[in-house]
Image (cartoon, rainbow, N blue to C red):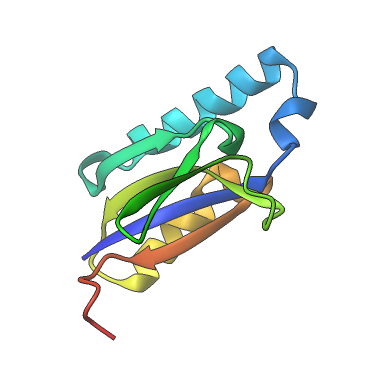
Length: 116
């Protein structure tokens, strides 16, 4: 089964780190991904949501909304897509993720949108 580990971090947290601290933490996250071996399907860090745009279609016309998206205090900072034999295994990986020290790691099973 595939699971995605979503890294939810406080929106302004990155600005509190020096570049050296940010690079060190990024290297730690990359090393964690590499440690997953064949379980890792994909991973990536994301730019802060102030660089994002939300797209919706209303009455057949696109509506674009620039970030940051003020209704939340956190932003999606990155993800790991992993292959695991069980939810428990995915939860164990999330607990090993360095991001769990400074953010929250949400574990979600991948499934078609019609499954309940």
